[in-house]
Image 1 (spheres, one colour):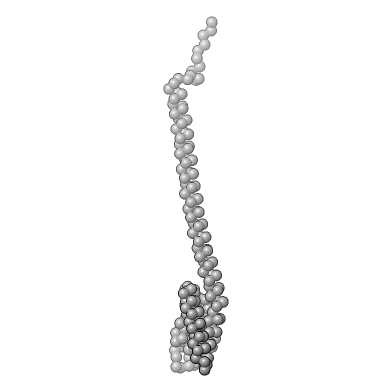
Image 2: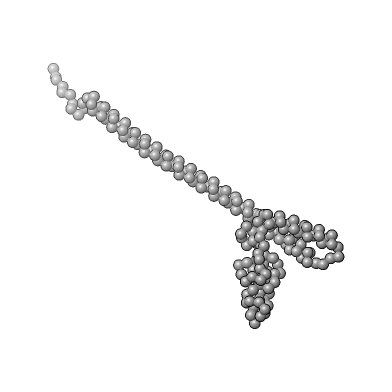
Length: 173
């Protein structure tokens, strides 16, 4: 009869099996915890990216609407100029003149509510960012680089230059 000795390396004692299983479960738990943390981090980043994209889209949409309104107002300005010229014409028909003035006031107030602001030019120092000099006049009666007359009113739209004022500028002789 042969007596076989059990192999020492393949010995399955309850203590080593439990320790091995515990080590395997602990390693799997740590791996799952790390994967969970990574997924949570990716989720936070994706939510932040989405929120930033939403804000960027809203800003672009707002800018587009404002730009479109600016173009519309720019197209209407020549009509406002025509009304201003019509108001300067002397006419015998006072009812006609009053009607033109009322239409002008209504149009001007509507544009003002939309964000148009006239540029103050007459008597002010010439500013090339706001004024376009179309005539220069040598004079001692006004300071050098002072706006003497406004040929066409300039406007800002919501703080941005829409159209510069066309002006006559004083220069020293």
